[in-house]
Length: 604
Image (cartoon, rainbow, N blue to C red):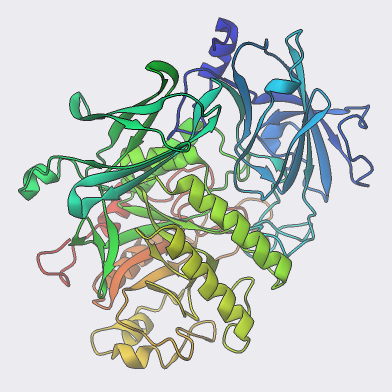
């Protein structure tokens, strides 16, 4: 299962794309590909495109400058092709795609090997049987992404030619890493970790693929640094392993906390996995997990069994030159570091299923994440079926990341615009809520964030009023929570739907602020958009400080999420410019974000 040194060197230039099931023998296919726009949707199979007039740098979408194309026009279909060297051997070769927007068909050496629908989730193909014996292989990809279609999950990608209001340039085609890996005839296909803090244990689910004959067992070593926590071997039954790994409970909190994951102490437990047949290793991989719990108790969010104040920032995960694709692994790490440097302990990833490498850095460096499903903008049976399928795939992909603490299927009634009056819209939200709780019983779920709540573990409120007196009047000490839910909020929306009164769930201000400011105006500033606009950095800093002080001192709130992390195209309401340069000193932002509060005994 060896990859030649020159190919290993190429792989080393890229971070392994799936950090929770990492193998040694892999090869990145990022880089230069042949490219062709097919605006008339003339071609359907790999044999048809004969001309490749453009080159593109994968994984950057063709709308981005970094791709080398930078064409933001309407292109419903595009084609990719590249050659790579790989000699067939006595093993299996898996071709993997991180994400292709929206629908993809993949051929290798002219053979159709995969078809996938959903622009934010991964897929794969076993290409062993179609490899050319010469070692020269050709992969061709057709990506279909109708720019006008609103009944598919598209998040913040605009359907108009020029981005307007709070929607941005489209991201078509390949926008996450493409890679191949070599595995044995039997290999670990999936791994799933479930922390069980109440029993000081970790649940392990492993699923195998390939030849399941013989005496198969899975060997595991679990470590905290150099300290061995567990070394076990489990029998494989019907291609599966389901076990609970009990750890020795240290007892007193000081010792327990050394093993618990939190933003303040992001302890990860390293895992070595070996798959054996008749005692011989046939596959091996690395993984990691963590001990932590994320739950709701009455009106507070609980982390590791203790009340925890959520200090979050809304992050849309766009970059000027690469759009939804990350410029590099270093850029993803830097975004996590910047959020923490500004005093935030979490981010709400808005309308984006983020690259797994971002989640890895959030796991490693200690940043909580709310994962939110990109919205469709029409309510149709097709839209709901697509949302359910892709959301299910996203939960399956990201379940084991300790950084994820909340799932959000819908935002601001997008795609379900008549929740107060149309029962089918309510059923959609409630169905996604219960589906999510079925797939993951360990995290909180917000059915519809912002307003018009029905099935939800947390009441999320969006309020961009920058008038501090208005904020205090709505949410301050003299406000009866029951009356709060009987009144209309900004945007003309009720907070909870009839039949779904507030049941004591935590109330979190999940969008507020939105202060637009640019120190050095640029051409086209008339397009700049924000909820409140200021003209100098001192006013910007003072308004941020005043808003944060008012929100933090509001006992009604169990946390907050400020809008937003960085400027995003015409939205100039970031704490950072689009290139991640701070608008005001990071320390000043951090002081306002992380100031102490006195409405939880002892402070958090």
